[in-house]
Amino acid sequence: MVRRRKEWPEEGELVVATVHKVLGYGAFAKLEEYPGKEAFIHISEVSSGWVKNIRDFVRENQKIVARVLRVNPEKGHVDASMKRIRDDQRRKKIQAWKIEQKAEKFLELAAKSLGKNLDEAYEEIGYDLMDIFGDLYGAFETAADEGEKALIEEGVPEDWAKAITKIAKKNITPPEVRVTGYVDIRSYAPDGIEIIKKALKAAQKVGAIVQAVGAPRYRLIVKSTNYPTAEKKLKKAAQKCIDIIMKEGGKGEFHRELT
Image (tube, rainbow, N blue to C red; front, side, top):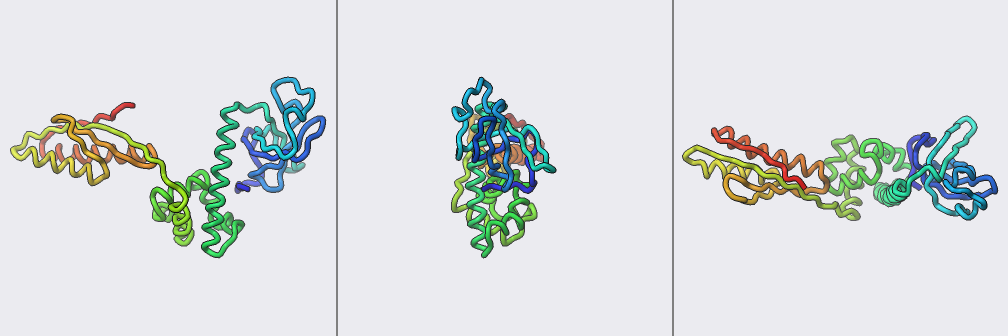
Protein backbone atom coordinates (compact mmCIF):
# COMPACT_ATOMS: atom_id res chain seq x y z
CA MET A 1 0.00 0.00 0.00
CA VAL A 2 1.63 3.22 -1.18
CA ARG A 3 1.41 5.86 1.54
CA ARG A 4 1.27 9.62 1.71
CA ARG A 5 2.82 11.84 4.40
CA LYS A 6 -0.42 13.76 4.85
CA GLU A 7 -3.21 12.04 6.77
CA TRP A 8 -6.12 13.10 4.57
CA PRO A 9 -6.53 13.62 0.82
CA GLU A 10 -7.31 17.08 -0.55
CA GLU A 11 -10.47 18.20 -2.31
CA GLY A 12 -10.13 17.63 -6.05
CA GLU A 13 -7.43 14.97 -5.61
CA LEU A 14 -7.68 11.71 -7.55
CA VAL A 15 -7.45 8.65 -5.32
CA VAL A 16 -7.27 4.91 -5.85
CA ALA A 17 -9.66 2.96 -3.66
CA THR A 18 -11.00 -0.55 -3.11
CA VAL A 19 -14.76 -0.90 -2.71
CA HIS A 20 -15.63 -2.89 0.42
CA LYS A 21 -19.34 -2.21 0.87
CA VAL A 22 -22.10 -1.51 -1.66
CA LEU A 23 -25.52 -0.30 -0.50
CA GLY A 24 -28.57 0.84 -2.40
CA TYR A 25 -27.71 4.51 -1.96
CA GLY A 26 -23.93 4.40 -2.41
CA ALA A 27 -20.63 2.61 -1.89
CA PHE A 28 -17.81 2.73 0.65
CA ALA A 29 -14.22 2.30 -0.53
CA LYS A 30 -10.92 2.07 1.34
CA LEU A 31 -8.37 4.65 0.20
CA GLU A 32 -5.23 2.81 -0.89
CA GLU A 33 -2.88 5.73 -0.29
CA TYR A 34 -4.35 6.74 3.07
CA PRO A 35 -4.31 3.79 5.51
CA GLY A 36 -7.38 3.60 7.71
CA LYS A 37 -9.37 6.08 5.63
CA GLU A 38 -12.37 5.40 3.41
CA ALA A 39 -14.50 7.39 0.99
CA PHE A 40 -18.23 7.33 0.39
CA ILE A 41 -19.49 7.51 -3.19
CA HIS A 42 -23.17 8.46 -3.35
CA ILE A 43 -25.24 6.72 -6.03
CA SER A 44 -25.59 10.07 -7.83
CA GLU A 45 -21.77 10.21 -8.15
CA VAL A 46 -21.27 6.69 -9.49
CA SER A 47 -22.07 7.37 -13.15
CA SER A 48 -23.00 10.31 -15.35
CA GLY A 49 -26.01 8.35 -16.61
CA TRP A 50 -29.08 7.18 -14.73
CA VAL A 51 -28.27 4.45 -12.22
CA LYS A 52 -31.11 2.05 -11.59
CA ASN A 53 -29.03 -0.61 -9.88
CA ILE A 54 -25.76 0.57 -8.34
CA ARG A 55 -24.29 -2.94 -8.61
CA ASP A 56 -24.34 -2.59 -12.38
CA PHE A 57 -21.55 -0.02 -11.94
CA VAL A 58 -19.67 -0.93 -8.78
CA ARG A 59 -19.07 -4.08 -6.75
CA GLU A 60 -17.20 -5.26 -3.66
CA ASN A 61 -13.39 -5.68 -4.03
CA GLN A 62 -13.37 -3.52 -7.17
CA LYS A 63 -10.47 -1.10 -7.61
CA ILE A 64 -11.71 2.35 -8.57
CA VAL A 65 -10.37 5.83 -9.18
CA ALA A 66 -12.40 8.61 -7.60
CA ARG A 67 -12.19 12.38 -7.27
CA VAL A 68 -12.38 13.74 -3.73
CA LEU A 69 -15.32 16.13 -3.34
CA ARG A 70 -15.28 16.94 0.38
CA VAL A 71 -13.08 16.11 3.36
CA ASN A 72 -14.17 16.43 6.98
CA PRO A 73 -11.38 15.22 9.29
CA GLU A 74 -13.42 16.05 12.40
CA LYS A 75 -16.15 13.61 11.41
CA GLY A 76 -13.77 11.29 9.58
CA HIS A 77 -15.69 11.64 6.32
CA VAL A 78 -14.47 11.73 2.73
CA ASP A 79 -17.01 12.12 -0.08
CA ALA A 80 -15.87 11.19 -3.56
CA SER A 81 -17.11 10.85 -7.13
CA MET A 82 -16.48 8.21 -9.77
CA LYS A 83 -18.18 10.15 -12.55
CA ARG A 84 -16.23 13.42 -12.38
CA ILE A 85 -13.14 11.91 -14.01
CA ARG A 86 -12.19 11.55 -17.66
CA ASP A 87 -11.10 8.14 -18.93
CA ASP A 88 -7.57 9.38 -19.63
CA GLN A 89 -7.27 10.73 -16.06
CA ARG A 90 -8.45 7.38 -14.70
CA ARG A 91 -5.88 5.47 -16.77
CA LYS A 92 -3.03 7.78 -15.79
CA LYS A 93 -3.88 7.58 -12.09
CA ILE A 94 -4.00 3.78 -12.13
CA GLN A 95 -0.75 3.62 -14.08
CA ALA A 96 0.98 6.03 -11.66
CA TRP A 97 -0.34 4.08 -8.68
CA LYS A 98 0.97 0.80 -10.08
CA ILE A 99 4.38 2.35 -10.69
CA GLU A 100 4.43 3.66 -7.12
CA GLN A 101 3.54 0.19 -5.84
CA LYS A 102 6.60 -1.11 -7.65
CA ALA A 103 8.70 1.68 -6.15
CA GLU A 104 7.44 0.81 -2.69
CA LYS A 105 8.67 -2.76 -3.21
CA PHE A 106 12.06 -1.32 -4.15
CA LEU A 107 12.04 0.79 -0.98
CA GLU A 108 11.23 -2.29 1.08
CA LEU A 109 14.16 -4.16 -0.50
CA ALA A 110 16.50 -1.25 0.21
CA ALA A 111 15.28 -1.16 3.80
CA LYS A 112 15.80 -4.89 4.20
CA SER A 113 19.41 -4.55 3.05
CA LEU A 114 19.90 -2.10 5.92
CA GLY A 115 18.16 -4.36 8.43
CA LYS A 116 15.02 -2.22 8.55
CA ASN A 117 11.34 -2.67 7.70
CA LEU A 118 9.04 -0.70 5.41
CA ASP A 119 7.54 1.39 8.24
CA GLU A 120 11.01 2.52 9.27
CA ALA A 121 11.89 3.19 5.64
CA TYR A 122 8.94 5.55 5.20
CA GLU A 123 9.69 7.42 8.41
CA GLU A 124 13.43 7.73 7.79
CA ILE A 125 13.51 8.47 4.07
CA GLY A 126 10.38 7.47 2.11
CA TYR A 127 8.31 10.60 2.70
CA ASP A 128 11.38 12.78 2.14
CA LEU A 129 12.01 11.10 -1.21
CA MET A 130 8.45 11.94 -2.24
CA ASP A 131 8.99 15.59 -1.29
CA ILE A 132 12.32 15.82 -3.11
CA PHE A 133 11.62 13.82 -6.28
CA GLY A 134 7.83 14.08 -6.54
CA ASP A 135 7.26 10.38 -5.88
CA LEU A 136 9.15 7.26 -4.82
CA TYR A 137 9.74 6.02 -8.34
CA GLY A 138 11.30 9.33 -9.31
CA ALA A 139 13.94 8.81 -6.63
CA PHE A 140 14.79 5.32 -7.86
CA GLU A 141 14.85 6.53 -11.48
CA THR A 142 17.29 9.27 -10.55
CA ALA A 143 19.46 6.77 -8.70
CA ALA A 144 19.48 4.39 -11.67
CA ASP A 145 20.39 7.21 -14.06
CA GLU A 146 22.76 9.40 -12.03
CA GLY A 147 23.93 7.19 -9.15
CA GLU A 148 24.05 7.62 -5.40
CA LYS A 149 25.80 11.00 -5.64
CA ALA A 150 22.63 12.59 -7.03
CA LEU A 151 20.68 11.42 -3.98
CA ILE A 152 23.34 12.50 -1.49
CA GLU A 153 23.39 15.98 -3.05
CA GLU A 154 19.66 16.20 -2.31
CA GLY A 155 20.25 15.40 1.35
CA VAL A 156 19.62 11.64 1.32
CA PRO A 157 21.79 9.90 3.97
CA GLU A 158 24.70 8.01 2.43
CA ASP A 159 23.62 4.56 3.67
CA TRP A 160 20.15 5.00 2.18
CA ALA A 161 21.57 6.50 -1.03
CA LYS A 162 23.79 3.47 -1.57
CA ALA A 163 21.04 0.96 -0.76
CA ILE A 164 18.52 2.71 -3.03
CA THR A 165 21.02 3.01 -5.89
CA LYS A 166 21.92 -0.67 -5.68
CA ILE A 167 18.27 -1.71 -5.96
CA ALA A 168 17.57 0.89 -8.67
CA LYS A 169 20.42 -0.16 -10.94
CA LYS A 170 19.39 -3.79 -10.58
CA ASN A 171 15.73 -3.23 -11.41
CA ILE A 172 15.43 -0.12 -13.60
CA THR A 173 16.70 0.35 -17.12
CA PRO A 174 16.61 4.10 -17.79
CA PRO A 175 14.91 5.05 -21.08
CA GLU A 176 17.03 6.79 -23.70
CA VAL A 177 16.13 10.02 -25.45
CA ARG A 178 18.09 11.79 -28.17
CA VAL A 179 18.26 15.47 -29.10
CA THR A 180 20.07 17.06 -32.02
CA GLY A 181 21.40 20.52 -32.82
CA TYR A 182 23.89 22.18 -35.15
CA VAL A 183 26.77 24.56 -34.76
CA ASP A 184 27.94 26.77 -37.59
CA ILE A 185 31.55 27.63 -36.77
CA ARG A 186 34.11 29.60 -38.75
CA SER A 187 37.70 30.41 -37.97
CA TYR A 188 39.75 32.98 -39.89
CA ALA A 189 43.04 32.19 -38.17
CA PRO A 190 45.96 30.61 -40.06
CA ASP A 191 45.54 27.49 -37.93
CA GLY A 192 41.77 27.59 -38.25
CA ILE A 193 41.39 23.84 -38.86
CA GLU A 194 43.13 23.05 -35.58
CA ILE A 195 40.96 25.56 -33.72
CA ILE A 196 37.80 24.00 -35.14
CA LYS A 197 39.04 20.54 -34.14
CA LYS A 198 39.71 21.83 -30.63
CA ALA A 199 36.22 23.34 -30.44
CA LEU A 200 34.55 20.13 -31.57
CA LYS A 201 36.59 18.08 -29.08
CA ALA A 202 35.30 20.38 -26.33
CA ALA A 203 31.75 19.49 -27.36
CA GLN A 204 32.63 15.80 -27.27
CA LYS A 205 33.99 16.10 -23.74
CA VAL A 206 30.56 17.30 -22.60
CA GLY A 207 29.04 14.15 -24.07
CA ALA A 208 28.02 15.18 -27.57
CA ILE A 209 28.46 13.04 -30.66
CA VAL A 210 29.88 15.23 -33.44
CA GLN A 211 29.13 14.68 -37.11
CA ALA A 212 30.30 16.76 -40.06
CA VAL A 213 27.43 17.99 -42.21
CA GLY A 214 29.45 20.23 -44.49
CA ALA A 215 31.61 23.15 -43.46
CA PRO A 216 30.86 25.32 -41.59
CA ARG A 217 28.03 23.18 -40.14
CA TYR A 218 28.48 20.32 -37.66
CA ARG A 219 25.78 18.19 -36.09
CA LEU A 220 25.75 17.65 -32.30
CA ILE A 221 23.83 14.66 -30.91
CA VAL A 222 23.25 14.12 -27.20
CA LYS A 223 21.67 11.07 -25.58
CA SER A 224 20.28 10.90 -22.06
CA THR A 225 17.51 9.32 -20.01
CA ASN A 226 15.28 12.40 -20.08
CA TYR A 227 14.73 15.43 -22.30
CA PRO A 228 15.58 18.19 -19.79
CA THR A 229 19.00 16.66 -19.11
CA ALA A 230 19.63 16.01 -22.81
CA GLU A 231 18.69 19.58 -23.75
CA LYS A 232 20.95 20.96 -21.03
CA LYS A 233 23.91 18.88 -22.24
CA LEU A 234 23.29 19.83 -25.87
CA LYS A 235 23.31 23.55 -25.09
CA LYS A 236 26.39 23.17 -22.93
CA ALA A 237 28.25 21.27 -25.66
CA ALA A 238 27.33 23.86 -28.28
CA GLN A 239 28.36 26.73 -26.01
CA LYS A 240 31.73 25.14 -25.20
CA CYS A 241 32.37 24.77 -28.90
CA ILE A 242 31.34 28.32 -29.78
CA ASP A 243 33.28 29.86 -26.88
CA ILE A 244 36.55 28.43 -28.19
CA ILE A 245 35.86 29.67 -31.72
CA MET A 246 34.91 33.18 -30.52
CA LYS A 247 37.95 33.38 -28.28
CA GLU A 248 40.15 32.83 -31.31
CA GLY A 249 38.41 35.55 -33.31
CA GLY A 250 36.02 33.33 -35.24
CA LYS A 251 32.22 33.15 -35.44
CA GLY A 252 29.79 30.56 -34.14
CA GLU A 253 26.04 30.00 -34.01
CA PHE A 254 23.87 27.26 -32.50
CA HIS A 255 20.70 25.94 -34.13
CA ARG A 256 18.37 23.49 -32.41
CA GLU A 257 16.93 20.83 -34.70
CA LEU A 258 13.14 20.95 -34.52
CA THR A 259 11.31 17.60 -34.44
